[in-house]
Image: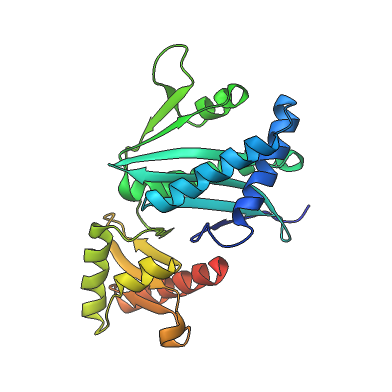
Length: 245
């Protein structure tokens, strides 16, 4: 079977993304629950995705691809130091390939940048999956689950779906040290793919941002680290940018 790759979706409003989400959700619901989503179900689900996208600044999403089509996705948002997972679905054919666990892990890693805990409401047949992955019921009999984030990410490259104030401050310091500028406005307005490197102390010590029309599409990479380590980090950041385009 073709290798399955997980990738961050920085701009969910790109044509075709929500359609892919709904296609996967519809197939999963029919397979697991024998429920065929109606036109109204699709309209409501799409409207919720649209509302979250426009009204919540820090949205995140990851897709899973088999090389040709999206075969799974996870979507959610971060607010008030809480990450909320709102959707996680995988095409039936790939449900035994640990795609759901990989998508969940990606969301947890991103959540650790800005949140202290992750919350979700589980469908009935997914409760065991979340319990297996360390989530606890809010109360007995509830289908609401929570997982506390106990450690900040370190020695890891993470996508940034929205440059929060703390991320902006760290990246501006790094950019200044490299005689560059950090254009927060362009990143927000264009939803530019962005990654940060968290060092051993869980501090941002490098970042990369995809290029836009103003700089001829040339990516920006800034690293504050000893030369040998900086070379390794820079290559990793450039590689991640390539995967995300």
